[in-house]
Length: 391
Ligand SMILES: Cc1cc2nc3c(=O)[nH]c(=O)nc-3n(C[C@H](O)[C@H](O)[C@H](O)COP(=O)(O)OP(=O)(O)OC[C@H]3O[C@@H](n4cnc5c(N)ncnc54)[C@H](O)[C@@H]3O)c2cc1C
Image 1: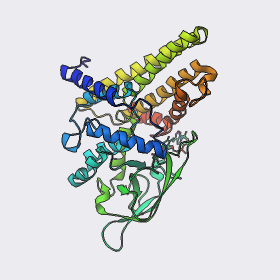
Image 2: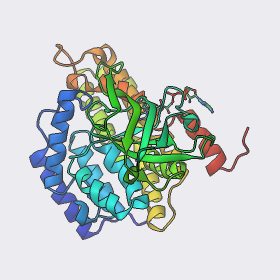
Image 3: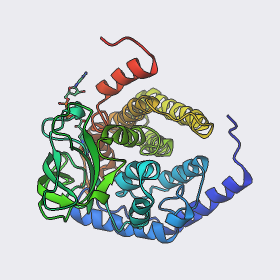
Image 4: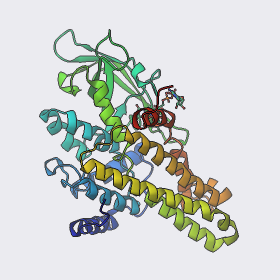
């Protein structure tokens, strides 16, 4: 592993930093998990696209820069260091797109990728159902061949669909072979949410944002062209998506390195104003920095492996446990440091950073649950990475 950046990479970093410093909104956008905030974030995504920063690692014909994984990591570091808005396009560009590149037909790539890059189509993920979360293979939504011609009729319900109420498209798994069980007989569908028979019902989260949705399918008709990766191949196609979700692409180290540097800044400010109160928290701030840096170095080693032809596969479960627990750790350190002030939000007198730390903490708590719970990831690491026997 060579940790020296080339001149071309340093130039990319400088170009990216300059653009972000000129364009990142001075006032943070409202939460992307509200309708108003989502619309503001989509505008931001379109600005990114116009400047060719929305999908840097994609080929140029789809709106990218053809950048390497290393270049993409540089972009991510700069993006989060600049405090740029959260990526409401992430389910499309980071989860679905790698799967489309791997399994999509040429027509599917040409149809979906440019619109995804330009934030014209906005994608949500339809895995979970009321009776299928950790045990995804227990899903009961189904797709039946349309008796009146080509295409498929979708029936069933998805839930916990992040930003589903604001998105235009959903990717999800449906059972196409009614006689099949568990992982077999499933098919991966790309579904326009305005198809007749689809009903999207938004609902609120504990933190008050309205970002979740339930999606109901009542014999909704979709064409054969909406099948990704072949009828009956859904499980293996979906596993490619989950590998992106758990591993590098959804949560690059730049995000946590930036969060920990904000934590250090917070500690510096607190120790200037209240040295006696800040001092006992010095160790936990240092520990968070060490762990974020360790995650960054681990990721660089992982990228070396990927570039040399060793895809992450089940190792992405290791990343998932690491980044999600690191996120909780960083936010817990900030809340401890703030003491009672941590509970002040918005423009309340005395609120620190407009209450961003408690908001971030609330979201961090969901990290060990979404993208597959950490208990499940630990099982996967034990069995598939370490080769330990099943219990
Ligand atoms: C913020 C957030 C966003 C989400 N976004 C989406 C989305 O966009 N699309 C989507 O499809 N889903 C989404 N989800 C749902 C998420 O994928 C599920 O919550 C998750 O898979 C767990 O499923 P469950 O909630 O049904 O819990 P359950 O599967 O019922 O699990 C309950 C508990 O039992 C444990 N458990 C279950 N089985 C085992 C086992 N075999 N061994 C050890 N422990 C076990 C779990 O770890 C967990 O602690 C989101 C969830 C959150 C919190």
